[in-house]
Length: 391
Ligand SMILES: *Cc1c(COP(=O)(O)O)cnc(C)c1O
Image (cartoon, rainbow, N blue to C red):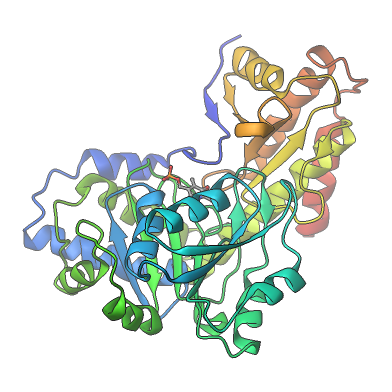
């Protein structure tokens, strides 16, 4: 049989064809009226996509660049910051904050779980300058409760800035950025916005802009104040990733087009799409006898699945690739071999979920030797779909 390559990884994610065409056609210089018009259009669209009145900046770097900027621009050496960590990306916040000389207070949760809010509350002190967290921890496919953490900060009367890595949270989670008081919310191009890696975007509150004036950490390429000044003119400080920005504009047009041209409604539909696909995937996999790695707080961005004791998740990843050219992700670090991850963020529809589960029925039976009746996982997903979208 022939095979179509299908990416089911939580970044990079499948590319939107319309965005690929826009990228191929983006033969333009960045100090021209054509580019300025494109850049201003995309920045305005991003504000709607993020759902905020705050400034949204676009940087030519992977998501980690915007994470670094959120440490270097907001803090000074010796500042106390609180990092909430429950996986590889939470550990990245810890390492970044340490690299810029912060005194890092940690609240940790075991891999596969989210934080105990009482522990977060107890760790918040009047000296806490900023709280760093993920909206969804992609390494474990756990969803964290950003709204609850924002409320804790507010109820404590704390001045701490709330910085959220929403790199797989955006497009898979409903946020009220301004209502909850998220000071920085970060996204990345290779996740829900359906284009290749290379861009990061972030919303920045007035409170965060004020904090930047006092920060004593060094910054040059990632000087957000410089980017804000340039963005107001439709430019970026250095040569931007022009083609990716054109692709991003086309992707945001597509998302709006899914809701009659209304980008806010399109964003909501995209999030609901991920939520339904994630729920259907979980139902199908549980039916096949798999155990969810994050049963209590599963993310809609991706699903992490534990393989039965004594089996290797790498075998599932390899078999899916060899038999169906379907690409999933193994666990990272200590989780390698124990879990595999399948994505729902961005350009996935319900029929992609059906295809994945159809493939998994064969893998569960032939690779893992589980007792499978064909159609079991697919039927469970169909049930979720039917209950969610009653005609
Ligand atoms: C993908 C991802 C990142 C960014 O990683 P880059 O490789 O720098 O793009 C950061 N945080 C989370 C939660 C992610 O999923």
